[in-house]
Image (tube, rainbow, N blue to C red; front, side, top):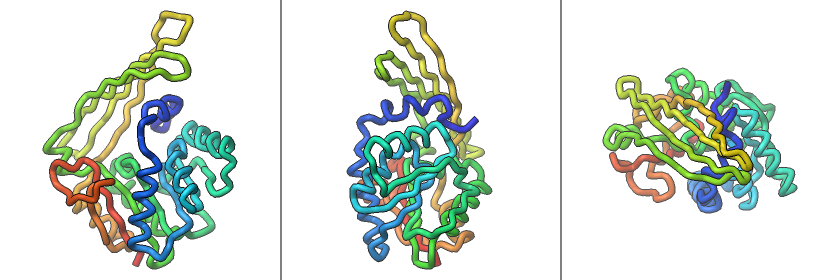
Length: 253
């Protein structure tokens, strides 16, 4: 079973306050600073498609893939509702996907690469990005930043939500394994749907591997990329042990 198989229906509610428009503008700005007006994008781990929607509003054409068919179903629902021809979505594994076209840039946002939880899976995903770019094409991605994860440690988080009229309590409980550079996040969703007073429980555990700069540099080198930018996601500040979200831009050589 893929990550988000059971939790896809809660995803947009959990991230309802996420400023996708601002994040799309940030991605566009970084790509524009290092590319020659890139217009076509391949998005790895497109989720429910909300970033792709905002990128399309900014003039990009986006093909989004995700390993979760449930997430892709919701992304295609957004596409149909908005009637946007500039975006499309497929269920596919980022470690193996190959399209019969190339793109100006490839992106993988919202710690998609951390779900590639072995060095081999990470290398295969970089190979996917490289296979869809001409020399000079860009790969923009973010990651949990290893020094910050080690310094701060992941914390248990609890959220109260209302989803389609149901009361939902989300508990995200991490288990950190520094020796393996991994975090297993156990998600528990307690759902009370009217008129019943009974609670339903849905659980998933997501296995993630955070990255250090050395991991990123090695993956770039092995796949034929030059790392051209590294900074804190959205703020653009230098990376340090207080920066949980790192953003990188690599150029295909």
